[in-house]
Length: 92
Image (cartoon, rainbow, N blue to C red; front, top):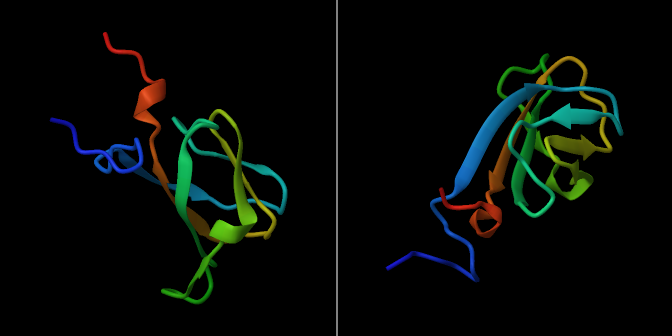
């Protein structure tokens, strides 16, 4: 028996932390594909400590391993959480 939600496995969630960049530039998120679904893109601005902004509405998966945001964040980190499209994986 598999646990699915609208065809997605809720256990297939991935998380990564990357360095921010300028608006419109690719952020490398290793392993993400265009068939995956972004759940959260959270910016830590690097100057305010625990203050974080949710950038999900500004973010998109532009290509395999690439996410773009329309906000510049060159001093902080970006936490990206996504739902992995397990249907796109091949079974070995």
